Image (cartoon, rainbow, N blue to C red; front, side, top):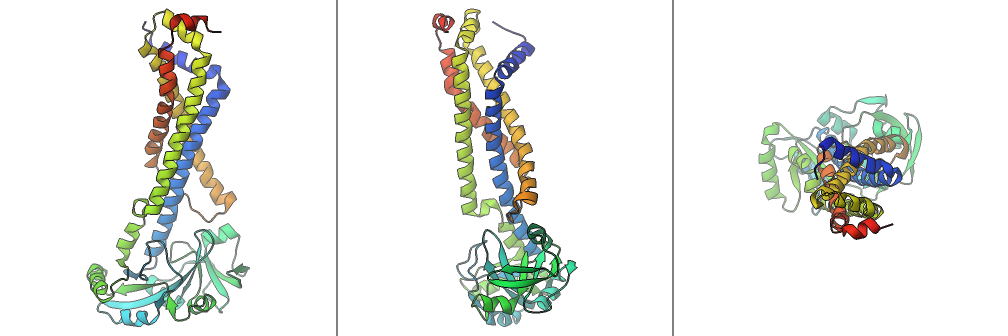
Length: 370
């Protein structure tokens, strides 16, 4: 039996609207699946892009990190500060400065640095409130952290067991989000005369690769990068732990989509046994019935995908205005079709068993079903 395309579409929409609660719950579950993936990916990209942007804002050409450190992980201060003067004397190096990094809860850190050296290397901070350090108990924060913690220049703030005065709020995008004097953080963390990483500025940035190769020969075991190389490594695909975590979440999302659609469509097939029997008795082919179920599932998956994308904007707004988690979520547009494909694939997998049950039903038994 053949039917006009528009009639089939109306039939599909009528079936979905006839059971609005089940249809809405199915759409919501798929939307949550999509939102979960896009939010995780957005936070991952936002965090790594923020780190890369702050690294570029330092104005250095080369970064030297401690032996055994990963791209995003650092022990507190394992390098002697005598390396700074040694590296400053290398050919083509015009300036060297070091920092100490103290991890906090979550992804936040406190960075200790020499304000004057940093200003010469990068051009300094653009202050939105207040200004540079005045005394050892002063702290500088970027506008993002200040907004998150509701801080202003002149406020006091307790961190790492110490009470600080907010000396200035600067525009984000340089060095770090929370900064204190280098010597102060070294003493507070029990690491005097030690550093977490060292930045080098060259007389000619085009020689960065040449200088890095030379330093790697002189300092085996030390991860040494050009800043361009370092920032290019701050991607989800380059960080195995993060890549694997996203893969696990995607796998769970596919399972969720499969279960939701399987339960919804299996129940629908049971409830519509007599209806399917009537269609079969009127000459509807197995292909037509299979097509109807697949199209219903596709409508649910597409609607759920669009709803999930919209909800992603809500999660970003919540992180910025309600949660104050310190995380930055980006909207990663290239993941929209990927996530949509994952949601649709999980939904279509979920409809296979109910669809096979529908097309294998005996017409006589189906017509007698109550």
